[in-house]
Length: 353
Image (cartoon, rainbow, N blue to C red; front, side, top):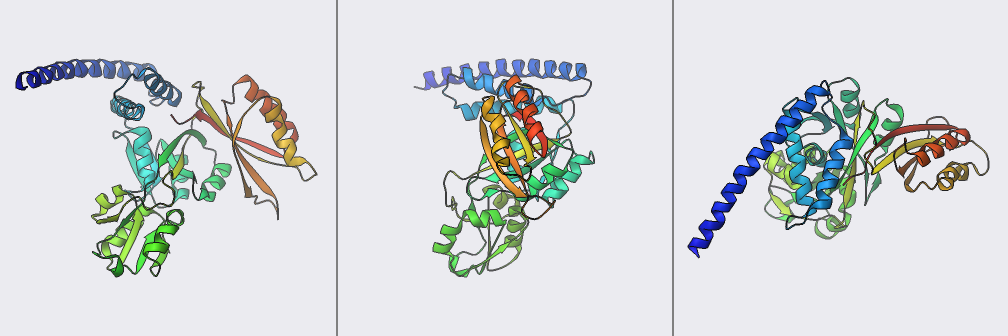
């Protein structure tokens, strides 16, 4: 058995040597491409194509998720040889927004924590960071209205999306649940864990705060308190994990959007996000959707928000399959602009792998 074990280890060592050489060859090519692009470091459509291709050809035993994660990190390290990507997110450190940044951009990116979603937009608009990461909807609690409102107002475009499974933990330095008098968390996370809280901490005050990272920081410093946050926040702020996976829905997922001052080329598997409003007449909302159906464009999301222009007027946020330069999408958008009171293309970008 020892002989077979040593043989396998020797094979692994030789493969590791080959991998190291290949990774450095890849990095050198990435550097050369960076020079040819004159500093245009990130091509979201190209990275999406790479991740899709390696996922399609993967024969295992590594899972598709593992392969995607590995290649995201390889691209992150290669990209950083030119310049690290800076990404603003809703902080402090330890939030799910930070986890979304790492999932999309890898460990070589530079995360910049912000105190609000508004500040994330300001950081990117001012050129303080290359991109921003903002939550836009949760599978349990629905849309994040502030993100939608700012997408409508901002000149920035949507450059990508991240789907992040959200597993909530109860963090507290109290040894017993009975000692917890208050629970801090972002309002969305409090909403995602109502059943567990009702069953286990029915008398504890539920205190909404700006982020789960802030909740963990407060719980770390205050007696008789707890936070609902991810495991990464427990590690950041040295708070004990008292219960795991306390979200009401085990499939709980938050969708994040990458925002930036960039138009993204087609990747072959894209989405386009729109904001639009209907004229004040009978059948106007139907007229908004009819061009999509006529041109065979699939709609994946429809959300309404009150408009700032008047009482009982609404803006509709729509996600469709395809890139705005695709023939059928372009035809549908051209027709839509003829019937809508207002249309803004928020961005076309690769769909999450």
